[in-house]
Image (cartoon, rainbow, N blue to C red; front, side):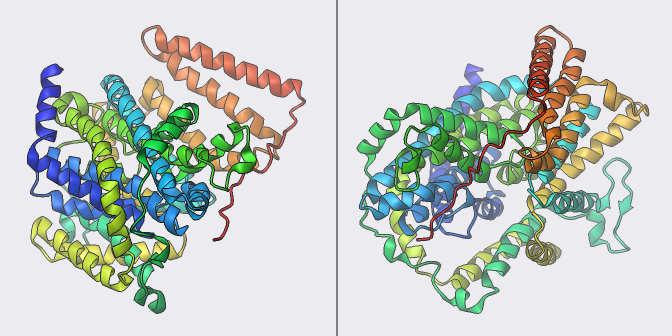
Length: 562
């Protein structure tokens, strides 16, 4: 292990790799600061650049973009009142009022250092938890892999909010896209309709860039007036602002309970497939407000209102990487892109990833730590660059980005077919955006479709008995949580009005305990007993209360228009 860690340090701290990570963090900070230019878009656009790099260099660069993007959204949110990314929405609630009250340097300092410490917390958990989860992954067979992929797809769709049906349709479309081309097991062409190009299927990168980057550009440019205007009025973003590092660090440490609680929320949210930092930052802000002795100060520029969302959104990255590295399942759309990068470099993402590729796994650990230190160093520089970029009209930026997309896609296989794939899926993505379909389930369907199909074929070839999907404990575990994740939106919507919602969590806990009892050893059955006891207690409490639902009140947070 020590030798592997030393090799990882040597690879990550190589001069060229440090340059790449610095460029990646800087690009992420700028991309995160520009409203409408999402972190996912930035990572997607980074992917073609990594073709000529080694796996360590490519993933280190994308991790830099990821970490920088999560921290970059606070700049526009605090200085202009417009959150740069969905992961910085809650930061704007108190960051912008504090900056408007004459303390922009302190607001930026609190955001930067909260992001740093939240990221460090999740990095420690990444190093300690991912290898342990990977050991559990060694118990998986093809039946368990298939059920795990099914769980990832269902929870992605369930997190589509009220658009559950649209989320399921989008996930199914992604799975269909993955089936186009030759069958990996039998080599039979499917859905090619006689076209030779379609027999090879759709390459991951053109589909990804088309759905996310090109469709986003089309959405941004559909209004001719806005397309000719600068991205935002940058008069509020003063390039002379100085980040107050020392005061901010003191204030963050003085509120260490809020920092740790918010970081844990971020890690937990990141572990859930497809949840992401757009959820964790709002959730952490809400919990910080509930736990505060002065909740009335939230929304007026209180430090706790900045620390909570910024610590949680960077911690989410560590949680997403835990899921990706330990189980081979992307925790969010950005780690889905990283899985695509692994495939391009002929590295197969799976629960055996850490044991099969220890050098690359430990390099990811080290790069994630290092990216946060580079982020701190580059914040002041990118603050000035942010002001300059906001003065460029959107149509100019869009032209440059689209040209880069086309060049990067063409360089993949040197065929124009990939450019047409990008264009076609860009149109599909644009239409789906307009109709309210979430795009994340499509990407996960494309990424995981091959894994699901391959393991389903392997399981049926090994034994045609379908009962093995139920009699194997891990497969049963993932099938149970898949079923409950599909019903989660209805539970969430009705939990303050319908009595049946009181039984949702107890029944879930009782159901999960069944596969735990089926597992070998004594630790997991003990956990099953604990879950069963907790389920019985919750049911007893509901019966004692006469199955009365107690509304928790309205905890929605509203962003005051500036």
